[in-house]
Image 1: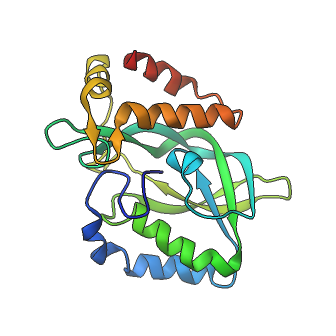
Image 2: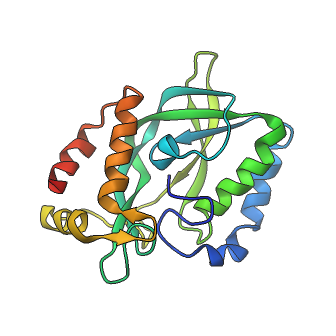
Length: 204
């Protein structure tokens, strides 16, 4: 998850949202949540900037997906000359994060706003992922990325991460700050991400 409701996480212009923002896939998800509470799974910037009011929130884990700083950002956290990185949920493993419940009276509005935030360029694949809560399992909206996407970075060498953390900056700040804010927020929620901690050593 990512920066603002007006811009896509992978760093593309919000002006392009006219194509994906009101497409049939959004209509499908709106129909699936009509008259119901909306659950949303946050694993990156939604932890420290959700930009919606939640009735409840719980630390949880999703299976079959993992958090990875492996999505290119050429506007929000980088530039065309020095692309930055943002997080995505990639297939495999598991991911701890926070699941939020949005009241049904606000669900459609929040879903539409989240779509504008995450889906202007159709890079993410939205999914309903099962999340455990103290009151039983729920299906939560999460924005995932497949390795076939051109925005997927693949494995990068340590030198590339070092350069990105030193230099990559976009209209919402640096990749370094984005990654560190996410790590700090995870810790505040009692979540330890060792892979991210190891990656952030390249920022020192």
